[in-house]
Length: 151
Image (tube, rainbow, N blue to C red; front, top):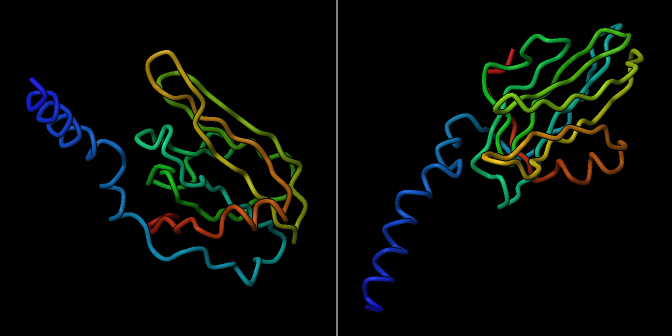
């Protein structure tokens, strides 16, 4: 009986682990590398998702004013760079019709950090986006990897 439980647990892990985002590696590059130059008249927006076990299999498209920022989803432990026009910027994400959005008043030449996490949902985790301070953002994004093939 005990060997059946061990077999069931091992078999379950073999089925579940690939779903937990381990295949995302093909989209990731190096650990965080700070952008040194912001294009004239734009602001720098980092959208990142610190690594966490809870919700690690959930990933989502991030949109700026209802347009995808990157064709690759925001995965656990990843980040993307977006150069925004000045003005009100709506950054949003959606999973299973559950949406999260944050609005920021973008000023040219400044840097902003949007942190993405997963909150508990009924069937699947829900995305949650929030603006964090530059100090907090720099601290939390350090272990994240840049998503390649973004616009």
